[in-house]
Length: 72
Length: 162
Image 1 (cartoon, each protein chain N blue to C red):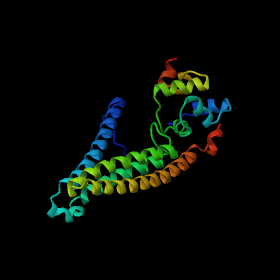
Image 2 (image 1 turned 90 degrees about the vertical axis):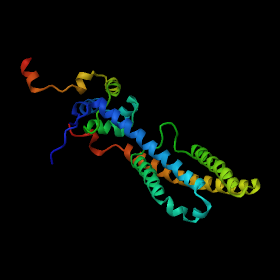
Image 3 (image 1 turned 135 degrees about the horizontal axis):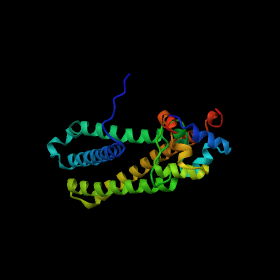
Image 4 (image 1 turned 180 degrees about the vertical axis):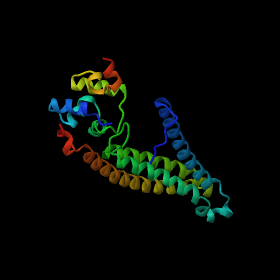
């Protein structure tokens, strides 16, 4: 599944994939693949990306199920 | 087409990749040892048939090596520690030349029982190895760098689609 939250947050900060990659300490292709949903990052990399984007793991990587929304 | 569900969880998947990784290197070094052993241990009367005797091992060894090389180049991967530059390429070529020289000295001395001949053969073999390795590493390093640059190019849609 594509990670649009991550992509939107990056665009919101007017940050390129290359810049985010540099801040997270990975290659641009890794960021591209995470956004495209083709690569599942480790928690360590998720944290590095969240730090670079100035947000939490919940903001970027948490997907709510329909039943969870109803319960709330 | 229905996708087969994996029986493995993430940790097991990583373990399996590690096992497959070890399997690759066991096959690689095992084949190299077998090829060298065949070169050294083949009796004199069968020596003229040596290329035919070790064809299978040689083909599998080359397939393993070429697969690893091209797959890494395609993905812009060079090495975990080393950079694709002239200095490290020369160092790696010298190491390969050194390994060939040691093998050739021992092998030639075992065949001819003359140290001067053995040293001469080893020197020439090492020099050829260094030159060929350096050329191959230079060409592949250039191709890998080119691929890295291509992969690092920002796609056009990366800042759109909001």
